Length: 247
Image (tube, one colour):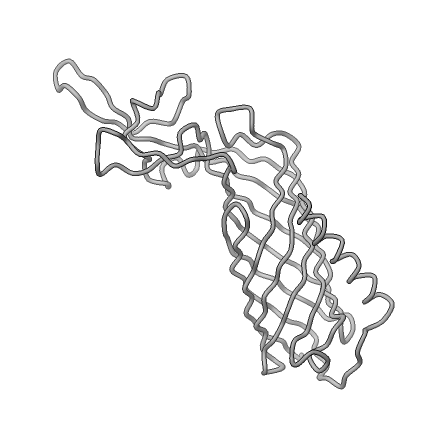
């Protein structure tokens, strides 16, 4: 929590500095738009996003972003069947796999130019938007006792009132039950710092670090216990690649 607050405070301070004026001035090509693709690794999973930026001045852009990430529970522990050696691992007590889709609008402001710090441009990112969590049910391969065939197995949706750990062989395919989940709407706030170092002025190669807060209108049922929350705090690192256009 402390790290999240520090990153958000640094981002807000950077926005304030850039609003007062760019720290260093430079001659540069006037770009009109840019687009980047990012690979995201965060404290509870990973994902990818797409960002489109429209320049409002030489150092500021209005950005639009779409992002999809997976979300794990911090208390989950991977288990394996003690009976079957080749069984798939599973998370005991996991009700749903969580996928989050985010759509947002925000600002990207450069407050240190490439010519100022050995070819590295440092910018602040602030985004706000809609966050939709999709809870996909978890399906397991479980032991079944049949009077004719003896011990067999079947694929069933996990039910904490029915399935004990001794009944579970392993996790079924992730795609089982893909369209049988439920959506949980919410909102989110993202703040970060972007470090761009591409030598080609029309190309974008950057690393971005920051924090994201997702807040939902009800608890998202990830686990079959009392630890489910209506919000997620995460720190993230993103590798970004893209281009800038002058028209």
